[in-house]
Image (cartoon, rainbow, N blue to C red):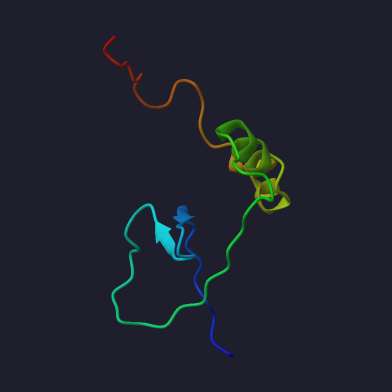
Length: 84
């Protein structure tokens, strides 16, 4: 396969029939063939803190720590307040 591929990350569940059920629709019109890579933990569940920790220390996002990526300050934007 010589063409470039586009990656989309979504979450889902594997059901009791070994079928993958995604949590949301894919932004792809079909029918179309796709390649699927399934990542899972040998542990039963991964909590949100573990997902965030894995993303925070993933070397794929190391470029975000570069000074040129720090383009916003606390003075940018508007505060977001939720109703209690």
